[in-house]
Amino acid sequence: MSTTCHGDCTRFATPNIRPADFYKNGAKRCIVCSCSYRMHGNRCPCCSSLLRLKPKVKRKGPKDE
Ligand SMILES: [Zn+2]
Ligand SMILES: [Zn+2]
Image 1 (cartoon, rainbow, N blue to C red):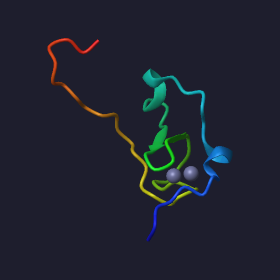
Image 2: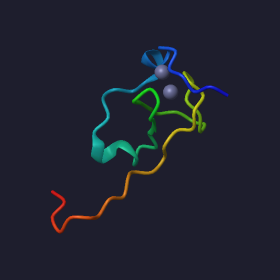
Image 3: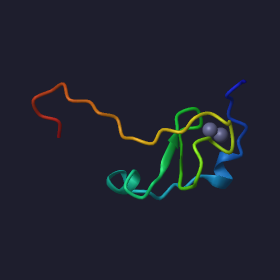
Image 4: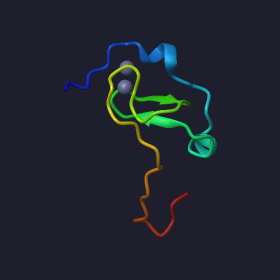
C-alpha cells in the first residue's frame, strides 16, 4: 500500500477549521496530504492513509503558550 498524495484532497479537504475546534468537530487530519477533513471514516479519500483523530499531546516546556 503506497500512501501518496494524488491531489484529490483539495476536493475533500476542509480548510476553514479553527485549530481549537478542529478535533471537537470530528475533523481529522491527513499527515500525508497535510489536509483536514470533516468526514466519516478513518482513511484519507486521497491517499488512503490513516487519518489522525486526536491532537498532538506535547507537554515539555513549562509554558506552552
Ligand atoms: Zn492528498
Ligand atoms: Zn491524504
